[in-house]
Structure formats: C-alpha cells, structure tokens
Length: 339
Ligand code: 13P
Image (cartoon, rainbow, N blue to C red; front, side, top):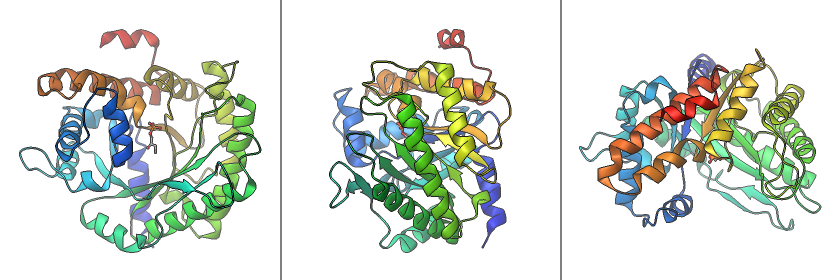
C-alpha cells in the first residue's frame, strides 16, 4: 500500500495553524442552508456560492484542504477554471465526500446507518482522476431514550472501516467521521460515554480492516451538553472532557483529529478548539474540519448577491484566520471584533 503518500497527505492536512473546510453539503443540506437566506438551490447558485468561498485570496494560509461534493468536484469558476485547480493554486488539497448519507437502520427505530459502499471502489478511482487526494464518510449516532444501541454503533463503525480500507487502497486519505449528535436533552457526561464507546468500536473495526492509522484522520464531535440540556457545559469543561475522551480512545498513531462543528455557533466552535490547543501538546494534532462554523457568517454576508462577494470573502477569510489561531491556542474573543 502507498502508505508513505497517505501519511504525507494526512500530515499536510493537519499542518500547524491550518485546518479543513467542509464544503461538501449534499443537495438537501445546501438547500436547507440557502433557505435561511431565501435563495433557491440551483446548479448556478451552488456554483456561485462555492466560487465565492474557494476564490478567497489567502485562504491557503489557514485552510489545508477542502471537502467537496460530487457535483462540486466537477464544477469550476465562471471563467471555467476547475475548482480543484483553483484550490491547488492556493496550496489547498481537494477532497471528496463519498458516503451516500445516513438512512434509517431497519429494526432499530430512531437510529441510522450510512450507505454508499456498493460501487465505492469505482467511484474512488474516478474521484482520484478528478483530483481528490482525500475522502470523507460520515456516520451519525443519536442519543435518546434507549439509544444508541450497541448494534447501531458497531454497524456504523464497520461501515466506516470498510470505507477507510477502500479509500486507502485507492491512495486516498480517509477522514473517518463518527458524529455523536448534539440534538437532545442529554448531559455532557452522557455524550462523553457514548463518544468513548463509539470511538473504541471505530478503532477496533479500523484495525480489523487493516487500515493504516498513520494515513488516516479522525473527524469526531466534541464532547458537549445536548442542545436541550438545561445545564450547558462551559468552554473549559468541554475542552477537558473532549481531550480526556480522545486520550482514552484514539491511538497516537493517528496524525490528526479534525473536529466537526455540528451546530455550534462559529465563535463557540473556535473557542472550544482554542481551549483544547491551549492545554498543551497532545499525541495528535487537534484541528478543525468545520462546515457551518466556517461558512455561516460568510453565507449570511453573501446573501446570494454578486455585489456582496468581496465582503463575504473578507468575513470568510477572517473566520478561517481565527480558527488558524485556535489551532495554536492563540485565539481570543477580542480578535472577533477585527472583522
Ligand atoms: P459541520 O461543521 O457543519 O458539522 O459540518 C462538518 C461536516 O462535514 C459534517 O459532515
């Protein structure tokens, strides 16, 4: 296996001061995001939006890689430069989401399993041709009455491991994303317990599938209070619980952990990452692979209007810069105002 190349790519994706932009929203998800600014989701609006993001000057100073969606990896700028070329010119590595979404798990009400393994080997070969150097697969675990079940956790971990092995076979770094959702009234302690159980199952299955951890990245949730939990853990408590949970479940051979934002506000997601990096050195790089927490403020500013592109890019660049600072534990709330 081309482990050396995989390792080099994985390390480049978690270079100091940088992280990943998740811009791989599926058709239903981007439609949901655009609805907030009253914009219909069409091929043109999706292209314009992604062009605004990817042509932001200096983005490569803080963004190491971008996760694209199937439609997006085939698109380019209005001047017909492929997006993959635009990103590479900025020193940014193109990646691709390869799962086909989380679907209801038969026999297990309220739980989901991610689909997309059939035909994956062929799709991976095509994505590599199109310029992708890494991939992402997301599994979701919900906390609720009697869930998650052990069966759901293991079924998702098995899927993640099968995907990761295929991705490495194709010479593409897998980003393994088991997301414990923040929806619900559960406590931070419940989130920590479920996250630890989930990660241990994921690494058991990755080992069984002979995945080279050095050439992979983990994309987990942070350990948080459920959105509807009456007591909300503070920044330091989240940072401590998250690092403790990861120390107990993630081998040091993994080069980096790139968190999802999962519905946290942009500022809180940055503050959490910063607090973890400010704790000192960890066995792995602690970085970001944010979707909403990176794009949210820029999307609001853009509002679907060409006249707002420059302003939106400024906001986007600033958000990326703040997360770059959080990678080093050098972010402070006062830096928010500089936008
Ligand atoms: P969020 O940061 O918005 O959770 O998105 C990250 C992602 O890629 C989810 O799959």
